[in-house]
Length: 240
Image (cartoon, rainbow, N blue to C red; front, side, top):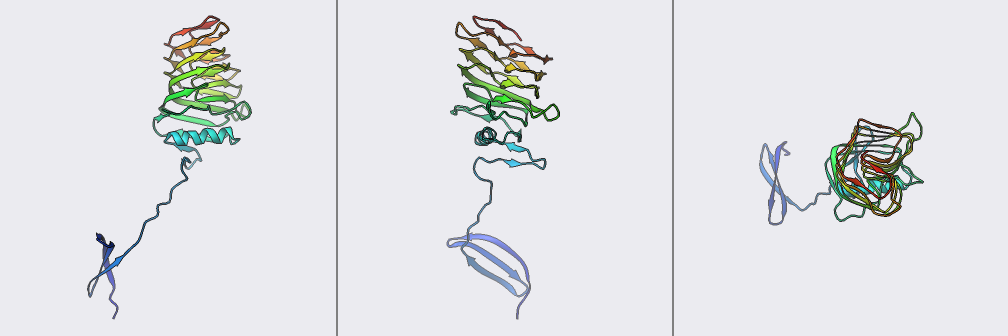
């Protein structure tokens, strides 16, 4: 006669995992060998929130995001969930001349630490139109950037007309044998830089290095920003 099962417990023994099943008629024990398979996203691919934004939690996920943008999927959106350490990684900036970053990146006040490379966190940034602007906001960069090409900034190298850089900060040191170098943006073609700050050093190291600034090497629109970092070069340079 079958008796109804009223409960069960899991326990381990020497042969595997034992499942003790309790019924109205007494206790029964079955010893089973089994394994659990945990389902998760592929390595390096971040999860997404309900709005479709990628939730960046590791350096690998940030690398994946950069590769995705530079590979042509350039309108995607990301949100940092914590500080990111790029130590030991030679960074390739997000957004190329051919595939400019056209999405939204929200750092939520977190810091990307130990960034090193020839540009900043982002390379080229520009949205599709005035109604579809690219935006980078609320992110801080720390590290060492050594550049030999024009248009370098810790947050973004070159910013187009349809882009906004907002509430970002730089703690990194920028050393450049190049021109158009800034603590936040290297060359701003017409976008808006607002509520940003620079505490990092910006140095031009060649006789041809010019247009160096604490906030931007060249900019059309800078609003409510300040520089507390040292800026020096042989050519034209200034605090902002």
